[in-house]
Length: 327
Image (cartoon, rainbow, N blue to C red; front, top):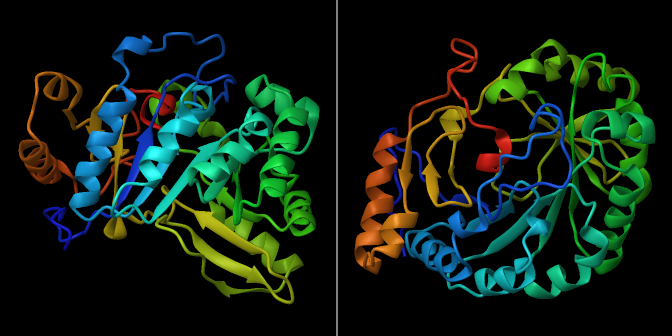
């Protein structure tokens, strides 16, 4: 079916980032404040049937890529069953998952069998003490999860490293070596002023052009490509299979090619990470909205999708925490 999800600026939406929970078992300081525990009640989350119904409506309207996010999606107890149902929906061609990998060792094989094809893992440092300072977790848990995903046959496995001045800017080459060793893809990401946590991290903002220039002095980087619906610009180290991506929402925003929307665990549909505009779907689902009306609601929602974000001009515009929307 030809996509009917076209925004006012002619962009076709083919990619849904689906948060299955706002809960997380670690606390990255740029995402959630230390000690934060104000999560939604489970009863407020969409049920498995409700999620499948919404994703089914999206797929009938041309959305082909679904990424499961959180919080940490693996804290949701039915994640493997939900993944199997979503991967089996007609029209869904790519089901992927973003995780901190600390719980991945116990889920990797089941997730692979359930139809999850690709995994992105947040990993900002390879130093155990620094890892704990950044998020309060244990590096060994994440590394164990990563190796379990590799053993389960996930490919590609992408490492997402938030580049932060004064925090981990002495580890970029080490992370390249780590990804070369394990055949992982590496992606650098700029910090974003999303909520108070993100704004508090702004002093560590590092434009990725500086990272790219630094790596080009060490490695022979050639233009590269990677399959997927995300916004990264890729390079490949000559003579290797390693691809390095740069995601630059601040220094070189990619809004003109935005092809995604975000659905929170509580059923709020956000059209842009950098705006507060949303459509609430949960109550409509529970009030008995028909399938045709649900699809029309999704089509109408695209009118709220803005041309671009305004993080630079108005960094205090977004007040929700990243874990609430799934990144």
